[in-house]
Image (cartoon, rainbow, N blue to C red; front, side):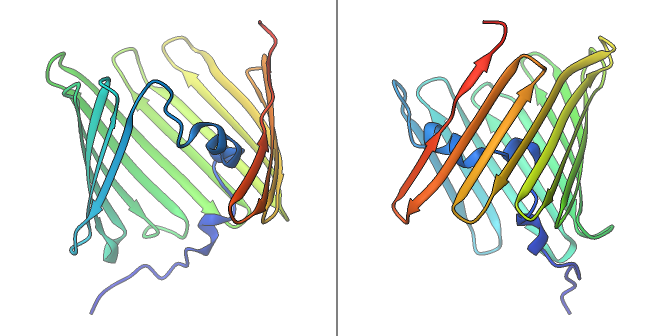
Length: 220
């Protein structure tokens, strides 16, 4: 008998992580446009659940990704290779330890330089909350990344921060608030107290999306 996670997955689509606030607007301006470059994305999936992804942009770099999902136990195994000859592996477990919790371990290795990197990531998602905490390991020392988004009836508020242990200071401190309904999104953000941005997204009809994305940098 197949053993599956008893936890529902509806809540995953309700409260996004901070980097996805305002994503609909950014996709309009960034997705599908490759000025001066040719971008190619190919993704296939075998009958056994193994996924293959290939991405190439101009002559700069290309990546190959293999992903295998063991749904019965909430496990995902990932292998990556790019044209810079960097190898990456990842293991993730989701909805097994407790409802909404996902734990991920990522490692990268460059045979040419001998450089190694590792990252341990955790996220907790429910209907009105999305929390994340990542710890990246490097030669300079570990860096801690944390994020939180709270949502209620379409209203969203989020915060991101990064603490660099090598420098003993915050290297990122971002705030964002927003509001969204089915076809309308409003978002504003402050990054490190110097960058201010906002966006308005409206889906007019099935084939037409409109957006405004202003930004201002205090240092410029």
